[in-house]
Length: 224
Image 1 (spheres, rainbow, N blue to C red):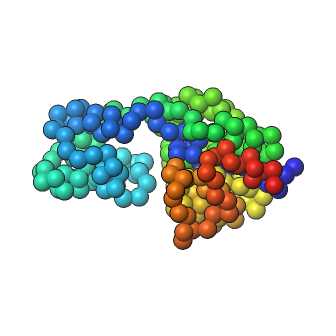
Image 2: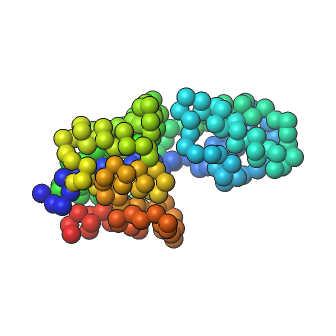
Image 3: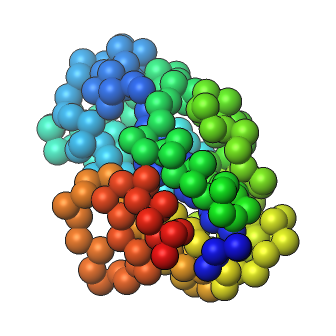
């Protein structure tokens, strides 16, 4: 047994990414809503506050579309129709593994118990796991979107280690978000490895225990 008894992974941005381009989804929202396009996908992401509201995805997205519309002088706009069009366009099961993801999961399985903690609900995330070649590799999968509290709260992390029968202090969590993965894991008394989508990102003021250029780098961490 290595230094860690268990390794937990985040899903989106860590082990997989959407096979649909952001522009395809963004433009699809306008087409479905019958609204002349304005803005760009990055502007919508910047206008969204916090993680998606599982119980009101339409309202969450509509708020973002409203803010972007105001920036382009396009108010009033049927932001709810755009939000519904966005959700109709997204194919959550259309995902591809992140570079090095399969190797990372296999390396973890050779050395420790393995689990997954994702902030999405099972209704959205189960299809992604079915589409991934390593989707059945986890001893536990916690869909925090179906819990009262999501990451960075402790509950999803604590449920995962309880399922695996290990201590939090002996667990390594790997994710791409400083705010949700690193902060949450460390608050749950776990070590945190950060693998940003953009390798040039600076973790400060957060202090991940490990910084990886790719999720595949976890093999070196586990071999230490």
